[in-house]
Length: 167
Image 1: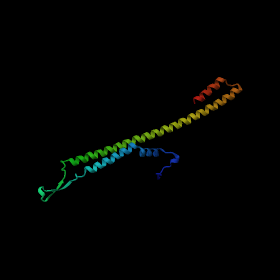
Image 2: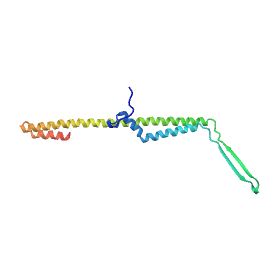
Image 3: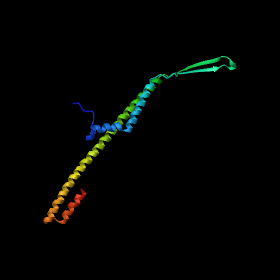
Image 4: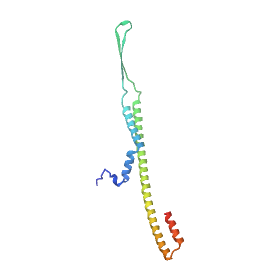
């Protein structure tokens, strides 16, 4: 069965949609994902050889003679194992950033699910309280009828009204 990947906002968000929105819009996750990009750039940079430096200069000779020209070509020599160590550090940084992303995603998803459950629980509690209040209204109405018939006391009626107010 193929699942529809678009979601309809008119019917509210289901759990999967809520988690997807939370993961997409969370600014902390965006920042952590940016850190992953930086770590990946460091990994690429660690695999490269150092850039050589080229310099050129033109100098007039003292006493009006011919001009001198000099050209420099410098490059840094890496110590034995330095490039490999830089790559290892960069790989570890990438893995750390990925782990932080996963941990943050799990935390955000759990918070979103917890908030959803709190809302659903609140709705259920509200529905039960409304149901209880409806029953208590019926009890008060019946006690008023019984009071008019002389079958209930004023105290019974006031107790029922108090319980209705509490509900």
